Image 1 (cartoon, rainbow, N blue to C red):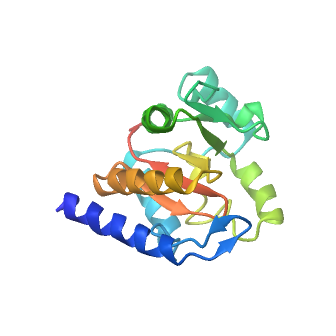
Image 2: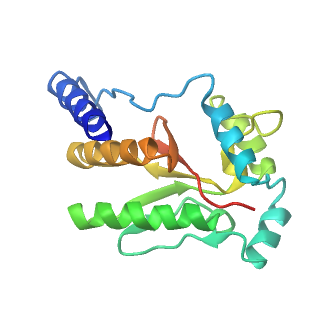
Length: 199
């Protein structure tokens, strides 16, 4: 069943590529991982099931780093961290970092170029500030806040060739279908929630 689902997904991508309109040298997106009203809720429910709590302040993040509950994301030959991402936010849960390593290595083997991580952990305080600039950002507080506050989530840049972009869509689709991740296609990145670490 998974094999046929992947074939259908590939056919959809190829059919939209042929008539894609170019905007700033990028094709119009056929969002296989489009956000909907339940996207953030599903991430929070998965995080709750994992027993992963939210990091409310930078002090909470720092304490988790010190206790080795959060793992560092740092430049490799097969992935890089955006220079715009502050050092104190280059962390995620171990399973999330392991997934970035796996996905990036697969990508690097195919294209000999690194993926770029645009974002990782964000405390609720940081998410609240982000909401002032980005009205599409998930809330910092309430029943369904951003999963970045859990350390489960990374954003991978969409600065890719068409071939790389389609490869990444198919690979993320595979990982979603086997229950490893939840994915949302945002304007400039793939927002990837990784299932894994239990606390």
